[in-house]
Image (cartoon, rainbow, N blue to C red; front, side):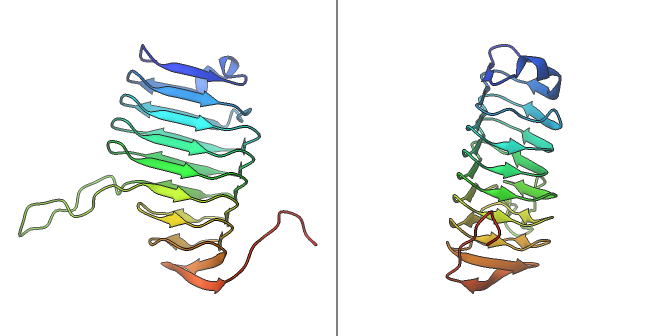
Length: 191
């Protein structure tokens, strides 16, 4: 682990082998008990990870690259299995409270590699933040691409790929995903 990092949270000391930190000025603040099947990898400086209270994250990886990125997971969110990747300077993944993510979830702020316009020589695929509102349900094997915002109380059907933002209180499905139903909400319990 790099020097000058701040790590605080519930039962972290017994789990330090799940951390890989290469850099300085990184802040990890975890207010929930994480599964030992969740790995945190940080490459770079001044990243921020916050996991609020009563979050259940069963399996996956939280990945940071470059500098100054942030991942925030709101209270009472449940995650079956996910890869959360914040990369390229100052990019963010923000997840609201009381979200429910199934297994095989992938959320990323970047395409990782550059796509170059041959006429201008400029990069055409800049990294962008991902914002997921509160009380969002992601079905199994959902992929959320860079720049996507999901409004609160929405549902993304299993095996969907979100390339564009969706509003609150809707269901999105498909590859690429599109809104298939509006004016909905969801409950964790069956009624």
